Image 1 (tube, one colour):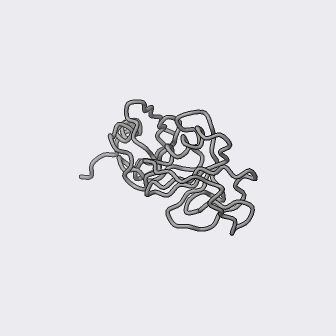
Image 2 (cartoon, rainbow, N blue to C red; image 1 turned 45 degrees about the vertical axis):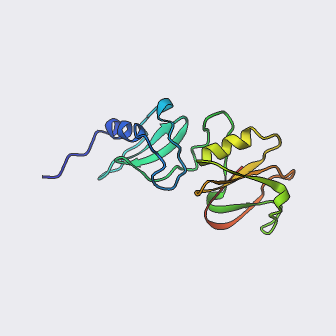
Image 3 (cartoon, rainbow, N blue to C red; image 1 turned 135 degrees about the vertical axis):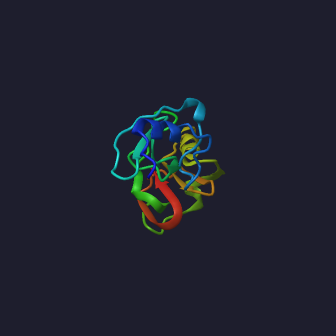
Length: 159
């Protein structure tokens, strides 16, 4: 006999109570001491719901992190970031698809995309970030902002 599906709230709590949320693609960090969990929807078959994590929605399937949707923008502060051209697998560019001067950004190493966003919030004139799941973070300060992105595996462009 198959094991019964967990109640949505239990599955969400189990997921958000994990000590390491950097399981799948590294978009979520692991602030287990400050988490709050809320269930938004459930799909038939397996439990799939956004879990609120300091304002960041992360989809859980049982206890496995799948991804953080673009709609979750408010993380560890009040600044909101939006995905450029969908965000996933996109590298930031300035005024055109080939505009990628090193003068536009500062590269730092961080543990998560949210830490990268925090670096932006702490940087005067920051207009957005480019994050790679390896922890490479570009803090963009280009006067004209980020207007383009190009396909680049593992990168995420937010402004």
